[in-house]
Amino acid sequence: MEYLETGKIKNQAPNHKASVSTQTGFPSPATHYLEPSIDLNKELIRHKDATFYVRVSGDGWADFSMLHKDVLIIDKALTPKAGNLVLIVQQGAFKVIRFPATRSSASFTVWGTITYIIHYTL
Image 1: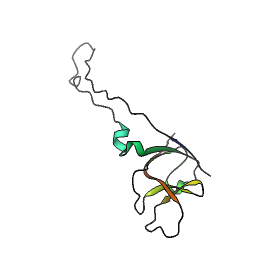
Image 2: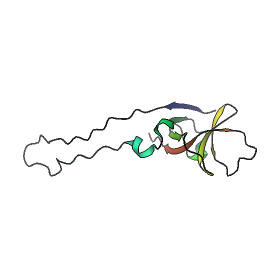
Image 3: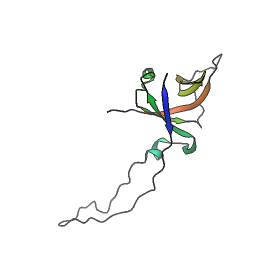
Image 4: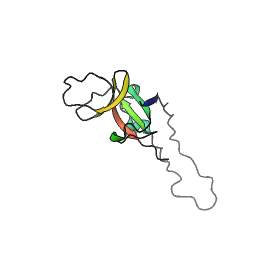
């Protein structure tokens, strides 16, 4: 049985202020240029209020390239299409499946569509 941890990450306040270098000698030609940091919430999230993070515990979903300590980004607002990875609830337990083209006699509740898998590498 797999155990999952869910949670929300708070957004950072944007910090796009140019700063002045305090170095001595010749100034760097790039002191006027400050590149903003990459905000993963903006890059990976489409529906902020319907997105959840789930940390995988164990290697039970290795068939889907989901290993111990990986983080799944799950969007509950998306309607799954055939072949999408989805997190379902079946008989009171969470499971990952590829969404079938036809839901014939399968009895499960779709909890959300998996949009990204972030692999733990340490």
